[in-house]
Length: 103
Length: 364
Image (cartoon, rainbow over the protein chains, first blue to last red):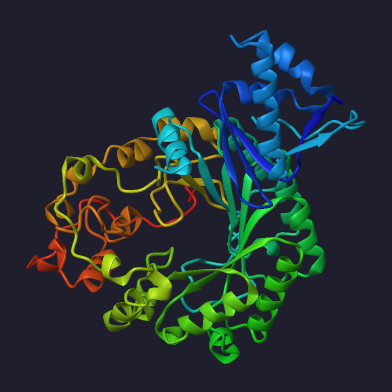
């Protein structure tokens, strides 16, 4: 399976609210509230770190979850947000930094 | 409960100003007959000052940001301000008359991830619209702007303020919005001018026209449900809060004055003198606004409409008492249901408990 690299779209709004990230697409106005785990993935989505490494370092190391489950859930999360253009997925690392992560 | 309501409730519990409305200027290229603003520049915030306010709002947790005016494009730095807001990752809405929006401006707004642009259109007849704005050719230019924005894939809403001069045209404007692929919003509320002048209230549409608006299923959906008598209020209703003004919403004027809402001119501080967050957390005025529950409203708590009325505390404040009724909303409740409000049934008006204070720079 090829590695995935995820970065945040610039056509989004994002802000932390009570430890969770609110994200809204400016393209189709879909609104997401990310839980702590999803927020950790979001914050690490710099376009240069492989998703598997994000899962390992930011999810498995910080939350009590099996690696296989974490990877599966992370891929589902990435798929859902990429369908709305909120996360951008590539099979190679990007050269530029992605959007900010939201205050 | 929708996710958005859930977020609003959470923000309220955490004391976070989830939404902010900032008027970047009161200057305008139109002179709408119903406008409540003074269009002179009494010392607007500079580019750097507004950027600093945006930084503070982001830090305070504001997510939804509305830029409005006046006409926002009267400021040459407007797109620079939007660019700064985009960098801070706000959800951005812009309210404009669209007259100064061409292909280039539309493209830039799209690049800056503006989620929605609201354009005011009063009538589908140029002679009616242009007579309200007092700017010849303005309807054509506003419609052109809608098309420029739509061609960039931006979401556009058409705001249709109703007054006596255009009250027969809302169906035409609604059709126009549909043809243009824009969202349609009708607003039958005319508010007093910022200097306290209430003469423009004569432009408010008569009750008979409100009857027709409230029974137009294209506007309200299920007419029977919308116009149904209000259910008896329960404890939840009586513990309820009026609206988000001052709870999760703040308004900032071009001069840095902070108010609970654009329609609630209760001076609560100025960002040129204090940090926004200190005003938001410490202002006695905002604290007072937040303390008011439905049960605390001397007239409205006895009204059968208390749970369903659109009572605006800002309009009530402009009538002299933020805890009092808002006559315009009493009329709406009456014309929607046929049931008079408690305020309408009173023989004499309540004496105001607060002076009528309008939007003005705190320094003056």
